[in-house]
Length: 484
Image 1 (tube, helix red, strand yellow):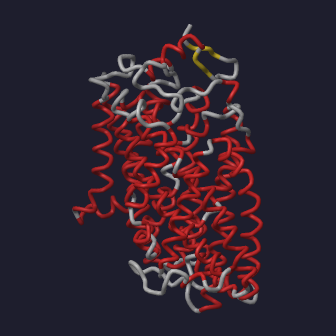
Image 2 (tube, rainbow, N blue to C red; image 1 turned 120 degrees about the vertical axis):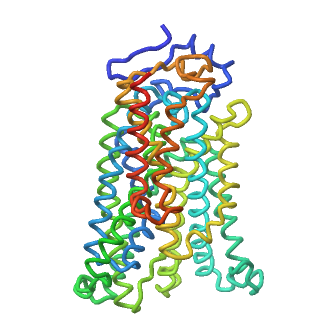
Image 3 (cartoon, rainbow, N blue to C red; image 1 turned 90 degrees about the vertical axis):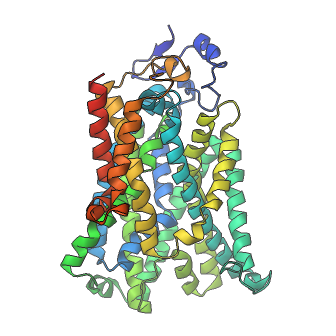
């Protein structure tokens, strides 16, 4: 028997069949199903994972950007909570097969896209992750630059005062140092990643609370913050709301696809579901609320919203507090960047060329491509961050998420042939390794989501890019597969 079925619903391959797969072009040790004995992640591990991923500068910037766009604190928090409720659904649905079969995201894609067709969505997801890696590396480098400046007063001009590409040479050096730190940690393996997540989660939460207390005191209490009105009229708010909501969903649209990369290590379905659901909703809302309150306080104190935390901590003035806050943000950014933006693309690149690219080489490729995205441009202002990045890629990832959900839960009813996922001529060969139905559904979903970029009459569809991509691709895939 190729598969061993356990009483809790989890499945693994027996040793004999696992040995046979070592010669398959679709197999390498990093993509192999995780044995039951090695699935050790508990509810706390998944909660810590989400807490550390949510407690990061991009989350802060996402929430503070809503204040910068003119929303009131209440409007911003409503948008954040609703967006995370929406994205939690595909996250949990696509997490299930990871725990049940012990397989990573790109291997799961073979069931719907085909043994080779899986590379299409995997590489789409990988490119988005590379962009996010670059963004986090740039942000982390900026904070590291602030930290060095608080410790060594001559740091900013250590390599000269002539800007390169608009930034001081030491800013670029800090960026490369933080970039290298990410690569070093991931090269040490997944166990170090797990330990880093467990450490970062409580540490970052405490320091965020300290910054919150400082901001509220500077604003003379909550009263002035709460009384601060929105600069958007009701009509303007409802015009901005669809884009903001889509941005909220798009923020975690990446993880809604590749959570199997983490849930494959889960001790049980209950552990991963409870850990994720509780931590994602409470942490995203709580930490975003901190960001909203702090940014609203900056409007009261400084007369303008400071939406970038690395600029805000410089206002603390005291070198000790600046240094401690910067160190906290560095740890937070490092933790989220590795978990959210290295693990998945490293597996995706390995899946494309299993015999030539392993997990570590995939991580290095991710880091290099991340630089090519020029992240310093993507974070120049809150509008570019929200509309030009989050909403843009959400349409394509929404289409992929829908195909995964429909295939696993509706078409196959949670039953996959584990052995066949690793062989080119098995049940998931389709047409020369590609499933035309999945490719067509992806094209339709992306076309509908991104149509507004080319045709002004479809601008409303682009504002809801993730939802449009999800609905369009899911429907087309279901109808195409039902006809087979």
